[in-house]
Structures are given as structure tokens and as C-alpha cells.
Amino acid sequence: MIKLSNEELTVAINEHGAELTSVKDVQTHVEYMWQADKKFWGRHAPVLFPIVGRLHDDQYRYQDKTYSMTQHGFARDQDFLVTAQTATSVTFTLKDNDASRIKYPFAFQLDIMFSLLGRQLSVEYRVANPSDEPIYFSIGGHPGFNVPLGDSQGTFNDYTVAATPAQTYSSLKLDGPFSDVDHPTTLNFERPMKLNHDLFEHDAKILQLDQQPATLTLTSGLNEHGIAVTLQNADYVGVWSPYPAKAPFVCIEPWWGIADAVNADGDLTKKFGIHELYPQAMFNADYSIEYF
Image 1: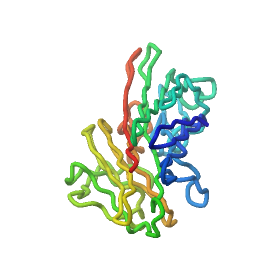
Image 2: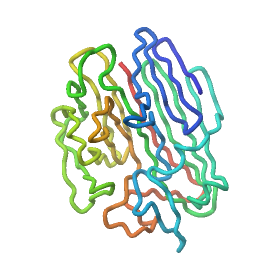
Image 3: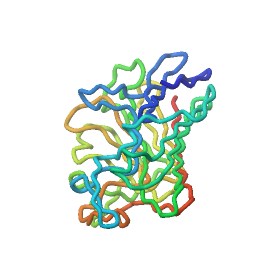
Image 4: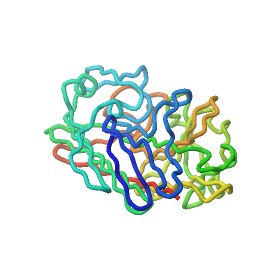
């Protein structure tokens, strides 16, 4: 387990999956991150790579060969190497290997960098293509936050998620686990969205950002604690809590990619929301979380 700390926060990140597992306030000892109670969801903040969401039949095709990969890909279940570290920052690295190439026949290097400054934790994804062929991938975060936060005796329904800019966003609904791309809709965030578990009856609420900056803020009127997730260039952001389980957490998920379209034909190069990275090129994506 890697620890970062400053005068405001202490942060723990597991080398397994490069997964953020804890963020605590130094003074109040408030734990902001969901603690992976398997009764509801046994993860904290997994990395989604090289796909986001689910594939039809957990399969895809590339160059006339069929590969199997389960939801959200394999990076979250791999051990990363720590390739740089200071008291307030760390870089984790994962490269392709014999096991990964069975599921994903591409050369890659994935670097995930965490940097703590004041009450803000920045997360950067860097995908490099060291080969002489294009690679195809998606990537995303899945951080879960305790609700309620702090010593409040409140409930899930006392919290809201606000968006900045406060506007109506394009949205995609999920049909089962798949993206209903033929029936786009909207989500009105001119006012904060009040949380209740029934919101997630049909899975995540998905805002289509198209790489426009946005901030989603989780707060209540019960105390001063909350979190704000700021995205500079994400394709989408999902808001999710498991249903029908009345779980005491919510995830705010920055995505550069999304689940297969309902009518996907399985060709990875044509997958909805896929990123193509040219030979010797590098892809950068980042987001930050402010804890207050």
C-alpha cells in the first residue's frame, strides 16, 4: 500500500489495480472513500482499462480473431509497478505481458499518476503505444464516496450532486448493460440532482461531456463535508450507486469510453466511444477530486 500525505489529507493507494482506497482528513479523521463492503460493492475506485463497461457476450473481434474480456477490462485486477514516488505523488505503471495479450493483443504502457496538493488529489492517465500498429482502447475511473460523509446522522437522500456549468446535458441511457446510442436524451442539471436509490434503477446516470470541462459536486446541508470531481477533457461522466441495494455510497466516474452500443457488431475498431492511438503516440487524460 502506498501512502501520500500532507497537512490536510492522508491518501492510500493499492499497487494492486493502482486503486485509490482511502482519503482521510488529518484533523477530523473523516473517511471520504467507500470502504469496499462486499455486501454492496467490493471495490473502492477501480481503473477501467482497456474497456469501459461491458461488451456483448464479453467478447470483441480484432483482425478476424475473437477475444474475451469481462466488464471494465483487466487493469483493475493487475499488480502495477511503482515507478516514481514522493511524499505527495506516485506513478504506477502497467505494461502488456503474456497474460494481457491473451485478452488484448496490443503493446501498451499505462501510467497512472496521483498527486496531492492541499485538499485536492489529481489523477492522470497516460497511455503510450510503443508499437508500429494502432491500438484501440477506452479508460476511466470509478471512485466511490461514502454517503453520508462525516459524523452526520443523515441518509443517502439528504445528498445532492450539482454540476458546473449548471445546465441541461446530453445523456445516454443504458439498455441493460449497453449504451442506447439511438435514443439520446438529456439530464437537467440546472438545479442539483437529489439522490435517492430509485434514480439508479436503470443503472448509471450518464452525462455526455464531449471533452468539455465540468465539475460534479456531492454535498448535503447536514455538514460542511463533500467532494468535487473536476473533469477537463472527459468524454462522459457517470453517476452510479447499486440498485436495488440501498448502498451508502455513490460513484462519480470520469470516462473516456463507454459500454458497447445495443447494436454493436463486435468489431473493436468500430466500437462506440473507442479511442484509436497511433504508433509511438501517447494519450493523456486527467481529473481531480477536491475533498472538503
